[in-house]
Structure formats: C-alpha cells, structure tokens
Amino acid sequence: MPIINPEILNKSKKELFAAILASCDMLQIEKLFYENHSLRLKEKMQFKDGQFFVHNNEIAFKINFMTVAAFSLLLNKIGKFKGFIDPKDQPSLADTEESKLDDIVTDSVGMRMREAEFLESIAASIGTENINDLLNSAFGIEAVGKPTYNQGEIIVFNDHVTYQLVYEVRVIFTLVLDQKGNYISTTIKNLAPGPSAKKSKVTTSNPSDSELIDKIIETSEFF
Image 1 (cartoon, rainbow, N blue to C red):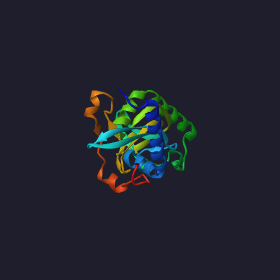
Image 2 (cartoon, rainbow, N blue to C red; image 1 turned 30 degrees about the vertical axis):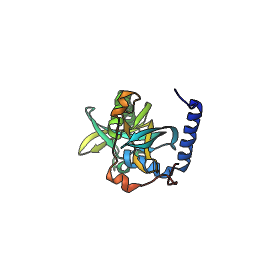
Image 3 (cartoon, rainbow, N blue to C red; image 1 turned 90 degrees about the vertical axis):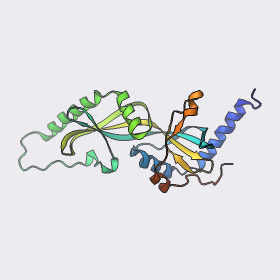
Image 4 (cartoon, rainbow, N blue to C red; image 1 turned 180 degrees about the vertical axis):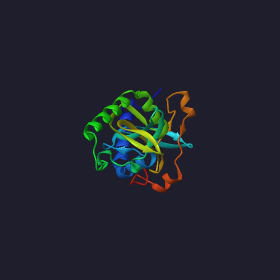
C-alpha cells in the first residue's frame, strides 16, 4: 500500500528532472548526438520525459529528448541498401557544381528535373517501417512518424552508380547519466516495464565517448 500520494511523488520527480535539465550543457549533448549517431540536427532538442532505473547496481537517469535529424541513405542501381553516409563526408547537394562542358548537347535543367523526379519515385517506394528499422539498427535511435524525403543525387560511390536520398525524421534521443552527472551511454534497449525489465541491457559507451565528455551536468551531485 503506497504511503505517499502518487501525485506528490510525480510532481517531485518532474521537479528533479527539471533541475537536471536546467544543469545540462545542451551543446555537449548535441555533440554527443552527432558523435554517437552521425546525424545532423535540424531542430534544437526538446525534453520529452525522464525516468530512473538500475545500472550496475546503481541508480541511473534516463532522459529522453525529441528532435528532428537529417540523414542520407545510399542505394545501388538495383535498389539494394548500401548504408548511410556520414554528414561530415557528404558535400551539400545544393552546393554541388554543375559539370562545365564546352559543348552542351541537351537541356541540363530538364535533365536535372527528370533526375529529381526519378529519385523522388525511388524514395516514395521505400517503406517508412524499413527506413525506421534501418535507423534503429545503424544508430540505435527511435524514429517517430514518417521520414520526409528532401532531395537526392545520383553519385559515384566506391566506383559504382549510387542513389543518395536525403531525409528528415523526428527522433527520440536517449541520454543516460549516473547520479553524479557522468555520461554513461546514449541508448537503452529492452526497457519495457514488468518482468522483462530484469533483462534490460544498457548499450555500453565507446572509449571515445568517455574521452569526449566526463560530465554534462554542472552540479557535482543531484542530491
């Protein structure tokens, strides 16, 4: 039988997470997002919710953020998925220079329009569930809703004709901290409530993660 009013408990929990959030260095969190997932942020992160859980027999904090991210996926000419391209290795499609030919034998603008229509038809044929599953598998993040196709390009990738499709999608970014504000990881799997929660696994951080940042909380203790 509860001896504390649940409403008071929930209110106190919200106040605690509000205090944690106010102490967070959002620039460092956005840097972690890029370093861990290689995705470009299109919007500032918005706090979604938070909860407590046990990690290595200690209390940890799971903080979920909602944001919009951009990503590029690659397909070969028969439609097989070849991977995601890292934004830092990807030139801006809008800045791609047109080939300069001495003799133009066709309407280059018309060709680009037909190419854009061709790539848009490819993008329209890819199922939302397939894209979201690929995002989760590659980056360990949860996509929310339907990805929006922005633009595409036919490029040379590993000496092969490749279709590059650029999307934006709303995602949930999960940050895990210990009670001292130390960064643990950015992904939690199998955190369903109930008996299955005992089998929960926390994705371990890479050595580069710990070198990137030790703390993202200004305060040394939450309590």
